[in-house]
Length: 249
Ligand code: PGA
Image 1: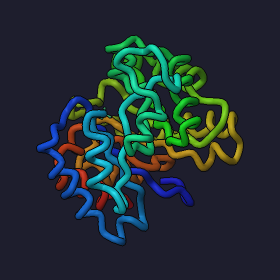
Image 2: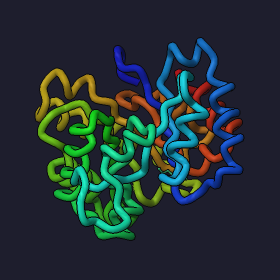
Image 3: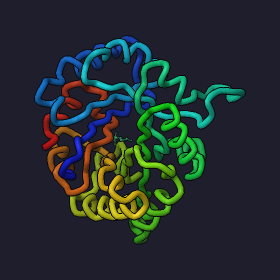
């Protein structure tokens, strides 16, 4: 954790969730008690098809709703895409950009991710910018250089976003980085943020993601410069997501 930063526990439902699954969201809303609300911010990013309904379920509660991707433009001839303004209009207040699955599946590169992060800020949304190395890059000793280059290329000009460090090899695999590795990488990210943005870099949240579960969340969230978690699989179960929130120091 970083003193003075309110942690953010964000759930990424990925391509999971039907209208019938909104019961899970209602359970999460009901499970966020006053003590939790004071300690942390909670966010669920369902698929775009559910944002409007999810925002309705969460309306007036402490749970925020986010999106998993956006286009950089406000509107126009971009079949199948959604602008941050549209996502905000639907009820989302945050958007994940540059997730490794989008980098891999859709060829998204750093400049495109920076444009999306800038666009999110334009629409008044929090961008959660994802970075992380592959197993091969870590094994060959390039993890820090890869993450630094991703930050260099994908951070917007102005602060006001969050970063999520998600080692690709830890996503959906049940493997997590060790607390020492997480501490080392988050320190590198913090240094780069402060170098770029001064005091605002010190206040920028750096989330950890990759197989965060109820039984490892406490240990990971206690690491210096870990200001929250981006949770995939475990956010699909209300009990697990809430247990992660409760484990947050
Ligand atoms: P996971 O996914 O928690 O299922 O590993 C994390 C993510 O991709 O954001």
